[in-house]
Image 1 (cartoon, rainbow, N blue to C red):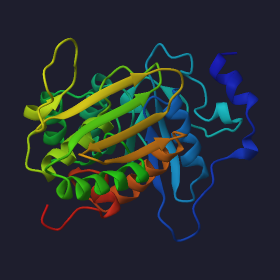
Image 2: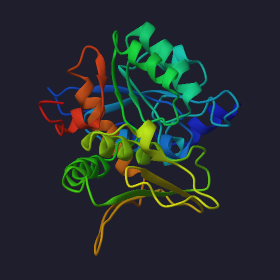
Image 3: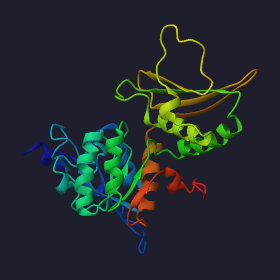
Image 4: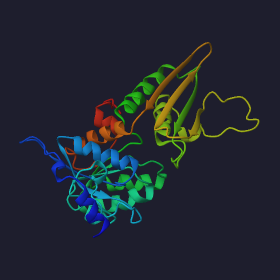
Length: 295
């Protein structure tokens, strides 16, 4: 008996995936990185949703979860095995949620584009050339790409946009972020997005004004810069603080994540948004209706 077969026998068939109420729309969702921390959170959120169904589960060929039921970790049978075969994993899916690595996401992107599968991308660390590949694919399929799918984080981004416009002069801007020891990129995609939002709001180019390292005798701080600091340690899910430091006062806007569940719920909102989009590249401002009409 294979490990995958044994896993299927160990879960309760009585725990089958919930079906949406009669007459409602069902979204068939595949998950990339299905055996990882975020993959598990996504599968649990899909399972708890009334309008989403797990339709595929992808992971790298070396994952010990290959061949197992994707929901075995919950003690349930989804009937969806974890596979390294991208085409097979997307066979029954309408949309793929991907929180993996840039190289993996781009491999998934190619197959999604070929098969007309929409994509929610929470992966960070893309180069400009890789972002261009995603934008090109969005001409054929609908994609939501955001460095952070949390509803709270995206509301925070809107607050930062408003604050930056009001505090454009006389305030030094610093972005401090903290994540768990396993995170491989720095600064975080969310921190970079915060910097981009602030820079755009005050008419600057983050590529020109971003400062990502300080050491030794650096001289006085250039007031036109936006500074970044990255902390890595323990199991910190994700903390972000933007400091506006003026003369006689400091304003701090902070968001702290205590669970990846916030990312999963935001991802499902993106799935529902994509159901109405034939193609195009979107972000969570589009999903949440936070974008100004003139943007």
